[in-house]
Amino acid sequence: MRWRKLLGYVSVPALLVGLTVASPEAKTPYKEPLKKAKTVDELVAMYDSSECVNCHADIAEEWSKSLHARSIFGTGRTIATILTAYKVGLKNFPYAGVKDVKDLKVEHLMFCAKCHLPQLAEAEDSVAQEIIKLAMDYMEGDEKTSAKAQEKLEKLNINCLICHQRNAIIHKWVEGYPERKAVYGSKSGDHPFEKMPKMKHSSAIKEAIFCGQCHGLGPNFELDEPSQCATAYGYYLWSYVAKGGMKSCQDCHMRESGLGHNIQAYRDKKMQEMAVDFHVNAKPIYWRDGAVIKPLIYAIVEIRNKAGHAIPDG
Amino acid sequence: MTAKDPSGKVVFSESKVLMPVPHQLGIGDRMGRGPYDKSGLLAEWGLHPLEEKKEEYRIFLPTKDKKPESLEYTLEVELWYFPFGKKDEYAPLWRKEVKKVRFSDKEPYPGA
Image (cartoon, rainbow over all chains, first blue to last red; front, side, top):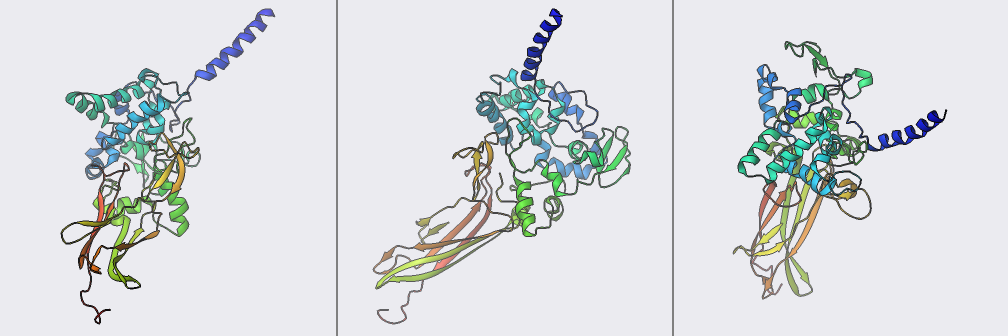
């Protein structure tokens, strides 16, 4: 009896300590959990979509020009910002528990990776640490080290398997959980590819809500430390749709732009043309204060936002 | 927007920033910049969907002997997108319009 009491007292604080130090697992969308990647190379292999190009060469070519194809490296500024998030943010946040790269866990990087690399949820903490080491190599290493780091970082991306499988289903209780042996799109049927022999229908993939998973609503409240990068879907819902806007993200960024899977934004000439109307009108006026002539130019600049979100957003 | 006389001298220059003002952690009166730092908005000065903004300018010009120093001016208006808050190698120029503005040199009647 005394032993039971003693064990009881011991086990309660032990459990509490366990709860205090445990990190919440980053959420993965698959019903059956995947064996977690231990290295960046393993994570790249887990979502390897290089074989898709054998049948979908045109689409792969379009995609390769987009920032989705290098979503964590970006133009170089994205990885620089992720490194800043570690150095300025995480290392200084008093309760993050991060003083060094070795302290980094997947959950620490999810405030960037939720959108820039959602599949990081299927990786161990060692991958989060490796990404930050690569970011340091890219930013601070010599030319050769930097180029090597860039090459590896550019393999981490939002590729075919992220949109057409991992993130293809939003309402999983209605449509089911994504399956590793299927690809998701507009049709159902057989898919002539041994590793993924099924083609399944995703209702969301052609809708704005699909893009809204990442190009989001504002603060990511589901995280212990909410971040805010994109606010585009928030503006889309509460400003664009509210004013009677009827297009989807895909209408402008994929179809009407003719860019297809080369999904672009402010850097692209076509998207710039589509985004705004811009007019300048000006005329001369001889203004007078009594007998004093004061020449002035009267100018009006008109800008109309035709996009389904604020410009800029953020 | 800039206004220049025929010699290229800038007689007027003004820029206006249209952007949301991200709130640092959504708390207090400070603006945040990094995504890890931003939560919510302190103010929204961006261009909303389907919204039209009209910016009006009344540019008074230098005079000499009760007449404009120059009868002709060039107005240059540029619309830039600054992804990182300033003009850098990542910032594309979205639009540029150039207008010539010419003042009349004849008074409608002597001493007008």
